[in-house]
Image (cartoon, rainbow, N blue to C red; front, side):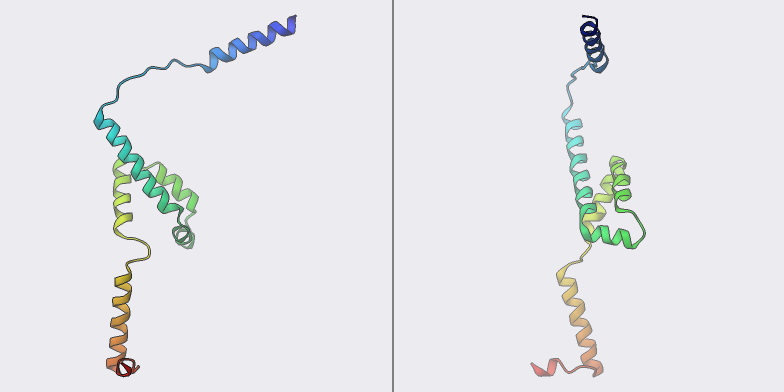
Length: 122
């Protein structure tokens, strides 16, 4: 009987200690939109740091990718917005048109200098 009352007392104490009062408050539309925007920015940054090419680039620079993710998670909203904007402006691979344009310019210069004879074959 003594053991049963001790277990009952422990259960009551555990319930009292682990329960916390909860208060519901209305959230303004502006606050809800800001929270949603921040979640979207965090998602963009998290997806960027999860890419294999980004992890490889960080590792080649001597930065631990996991540490970079943790630091990105602790950014303020304005820092997060700035980083997210820069990520979208400068993709890691560059654009296909820029690569093709650079290739054409290199081939044209080599043709004009006389190193290759590629354009006369067409």
